[in-house]
Image 1 (tube, helix red, strand yellow):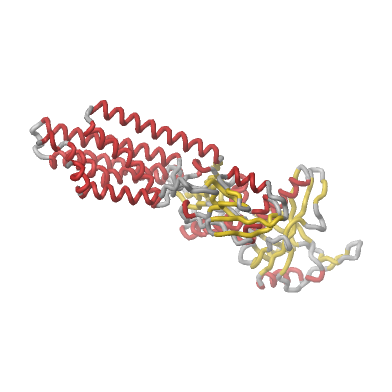
Image 2: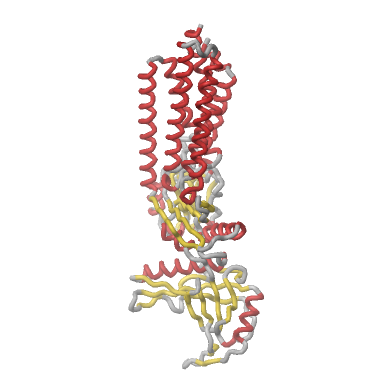
Length: 526
């Protein structure tokens, strides 16, 4: 009889429907196998076979997953690494994913070009402190307009895309003092990679005899990044120096007609010098500056004097303790310079004021600890409720609603694609604590009405309880709103999760809970 009344009450029906919708938003899929594709490096074997990096807006369970390599199942990241390391070089390889099969020639693990992570089991998007990665907070050296901030964000996103990093978030933030910040979060990347591409303003200038002939960005229409026209300069290679092993890179670029015209104007009045070997060069070099620092100086062949030439070569160098490290550092310097040439400079210099890197293993440990704390908290609350009321028909609705509220909060976060981080988990705990307090207020008001003639009807008792609940709700929301902007937005997850939790409670679960209590206590009232 009571079960029928529970399932036919419209407030409880809304609560159940909302619960089911949020469960679908989370989409628990514990059976998901394989590893999810985090990124596909440009010009890698996987890229040339047709694989592409995932869309950052895709929900976790819809991302492409690698299932098999040469018909051998891939169960997790460890098995992926083991299989890749065991493939002989220069062999035909078949990758089976959720989108089909890819045939490629495997040359080396590094050139496969795949970055992967364990297949997601649901649509809850974990923050960096739970999945690992790097967060960098940058501040403009001066206050910028809304238009310039949009340009900075667009440039940052483009740099990250060009550099080959995915699973990224680039957003602006302000604190309560009005300071402006740019927050960049990159999952699965180390701090050095992110700092290298974000720390510089990226102001690239090429000068001849003090005259700027072209800039990075619009003046450069094409930058070669393939092996046939970029890489370690074969004419120079790597050489031992007093500082270590120095290597030189070279890659070709295509200039706009306007930039090529400025180059011709700057060289037409230069004189020609001859080396001891009879080679002819102009008496002034082309100097390359990055953020006002001279990074290289190249001699100009005499045949380019006064001519409009759009195809030229750019070179630079890197140094390391040995040949291998020198080559690696040279490749990194080349990639950074190529990125700046493609994206151009920022309208203002940015200063890195904070950067954090967390390993995936540490994030998983945080997640396990948070889950354990949540379970222990639920058990503690359950025991307190049972001891307090000593009646199952009172304790059961409280325990049911507490448990379901966790799923509702996670569901809304998944639906809104809100990252769940450590601060967000703290917000869930606060929301659940507030929920328990509200339910106890409602329960006590109902039981108080039974023992007193002050409130003669159930509606009057609930009205009194909800007056207290709503006052607490508005006070909580009001206190959370400043935290959205405080600390450069780093407390945003805590504030938004708390607001989601208490809003769910006040408008969905509390009304349903009140109806549950009314139905469960009907016999006593009669």
